[in-house]
Length: 193
Image 1 (cartoon, rainbow, N blue to C red):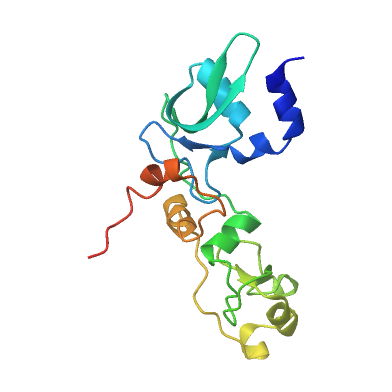
Image 2: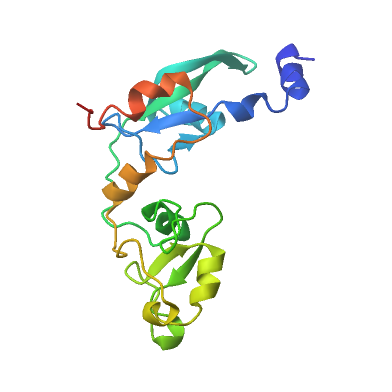
């Protein structure tokens, strides 16, 4: 029996902890929130298909019957992918726009969303009419107007552009940041004086 396969059997979680940071051809992450990561298998496949260049590696290796390869930790796409021009209207992007904070009371944690002008009163599900809300504020407001509920928004909801969402995403780094990624994550951030 191949000893290398046996090592993976004994450590089934070994390869789960080796994602590759994916950079666009301009060496910027494809996205910050969520951070553009591939499982190690995808990074190796893209390397063999010559779709990416490996710029940093983990110390760990994987084996095939005929070769051994260090697991990529940072890969760069060989062809530039144009960023989206319009931010997708998703629950996650809405929470990101509002920085995972209730737009009524400022609470953080479990969020839901609320229609500023309730749907029962003709309100639409759009960037300009939906905000992140904590459960208690959502229940308190119900299908009332802000004035009827005696509530205020902390800021007016607007449609964000993708770059605004990327910049907000930098405030919420993932739980795991490998040291080899640091040189590629924040190089285009504005320096503080």
